[in-house]
Every structure is written in C-alpha cells, then in structure tokens.
Length: 244
Image (cartoon, rainbow, N blue to C red; front, top):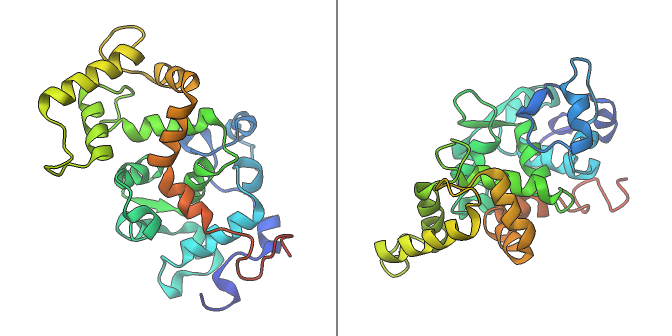
C-alpha cells in the first residue's frame, strides 16, 4: 500500500477523534454512544462509537485505502475521501451479494447516496460485526429490504426481496400465484396491525420470535459485510493478536 503515510498508525488512531459523528446519520453506533454523539460537544474514538476493535479499524482503513488512487492514500486525504459504489462493489465479498446495491445505499451519507466515506465503511462493518446487537442488525436488515425507503415493507418490497433470495432465472423465479401465496403467508405471520405492510417493530417482533429466521437474515442479507469484516483478522500487516 505504499509508504508509512498510507494508513493509520496505531498511535494516530489512539489520538484521532471522531469527525462528523452527529445524530442518527451514523449507522453503526453503539447504543450507549448515541445520546453522547447527538450533543454538539459529543466526540469520542471510533472504538467507543462502533462495535469494532482498534485492530479491526486499522485494517478497515487499509482495505479502504486500497480503493483510493495511490496519491490520495495519506491519512488526512483518506479520511475525507469518498469511494464510488462501482469501486466498493468491486470488493469480492460484496460483488456476489444480491443486496449489494441496497447495502451501499443504506450506509451512504452522500446526498446522492452513490459513494461511501471511510466512516460510512466503518458503519457498515460495525453493523455486520459479531459484537453488534441483534436490534441493530435487524434494524439495518429492515432498511436493506425496504427498497423504496418508505419505512415499511409492502408487497412490492417483499416481492423484490423474494426475487433477490431465489434469483430471477426461469428455473428459480416463482410464478405469480406462488409469489402471491408466499407474500400472503408472510403478511399473515408478520403484519400485526393488518395494514397490508410490515413496519420495523413488526419485523423485529417476528425476528425475536424466530431465532432461526434471524440467523438466516444474518447469513443472507448481512453475509457480505461479515465476509468483509472477516478479512480484518489480527494477523494483518504490523498487527498481531495483541495489537502490537
């Protein structure tokens, strides 16, 4: 990755304060950090505000820098840079995921939602980490499945969700009658207030009653992020299991 200025040093990470963590735009915040981050004076280390360890953040920065032009890999430039979805989706762990575009859009803080900053990238990894809470995982799974971003899962969202899971080839795509029956069954099980849609609380309620379904969501919808996180083993360059 180039010279020593191309990635965060452990010393700089220990001193570097979070920039731009304000309000609910930060996706992967620890619950106990949310109220602090919403105050104008609220500042803290990335390790305090995410579910990631210092070693994971160091290696995440190295992975993010690999997507930047060589001349923009200094610490300061990389922390201000944004990477296009085209480059983000070139990461093998995301490339094959059926929800890859939705994952990028959900975690992007760009006004046009077409790129990720380093903090966006950390948010994604934080949500997909093993230490993130079930509520946070289910919250972002719901957002990924909410294709039209209207705060509910309607029949169109559910149809697109099923097609993503089964594939849209002739040999795997459900017929119109099969799709209707499946969505009817999903709504019958999940739509508590019978308004024809599934809201976040209904979605989380179903997951809380169905541990197997929650695990399935983690494997399917959130699998790509976990795969990316899996590359941040403590055997990365210059970092052993003790962070030395």
